[in-house]
Amino acid sequence: MNTKLFVGNLSFKLTESDLETLFSQAGQVVSVSIPTDRETGRKRGFAFVEMSSQAEAENAVRLLNGQTVEDRQLKVNPSKPKEKGGSGGGGKRW
Image 1 (cartoon, rainbow, N blue to C red):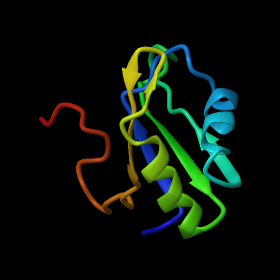
Image 2: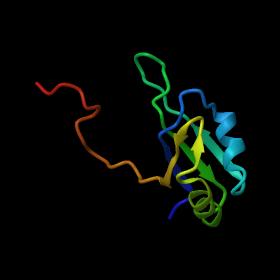
Image 3: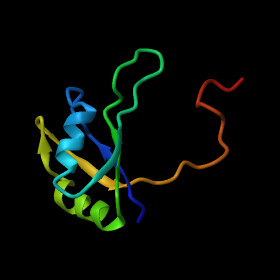
């Protein structure tokens, strides 16, 4: 397991600061990123949180996976590395 976590099923109201506060219950938070849609600028409903150690990342999964925040049940899992290759964006293929 690495130290970067995928956090799914997020409320669109949550901020990076909110997530940092929430995940600090499990240990030291290194970074928080909430991706946004390129075209609309709206949050996409998930985030990446990096913890300072593998033990803290595992603790965060144990503590926060399934926890209800803003009426939504969080999904917290180890982040999987991006796969190389692909179509370059998922757009239409001509």
